[in-house]
Amino acid sequence: MPQNPFSNPMLEWWQQQWTKGANPMARTQLAWMEGLAEALQFEAEFLKAIAESGERIAECFDGPQPTTPEQVQACYEKLVKEVSNAQMKRLEHATKLSHDFRKRLWEEI
Image (cartoon, rainbow, N blue to C red; front, side, top):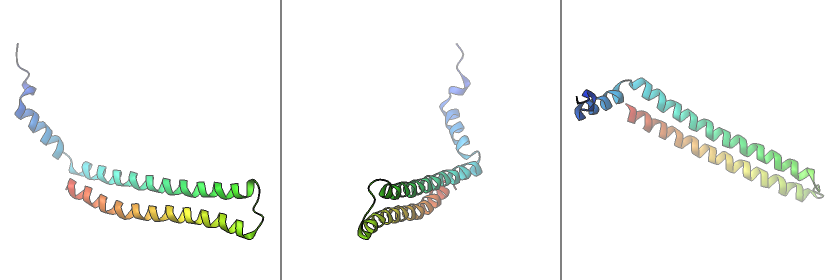
């Protein structure tokens, strides 16, 4: 039975190395697109937090409505705190994203 010419370990190693170095621009573009996907995910999480806070503000006035200014203020303060926490998380992700992107890009180069 003839031996498969493509089963040579040296040939397999060469094929792996060739595919790794075949197109550095494609790998760079892939790193960029992964970074973009992460950024879009963080933005979607932030928009979700804003939508949820809008839902909660509607709930404040949907059922038994606040009767005093203090109750309205407590409701608003809670929602503002949630949105500001989401914004801080968003900014934290954005700073890490820049570093991670540069790291990925450097690894591809």
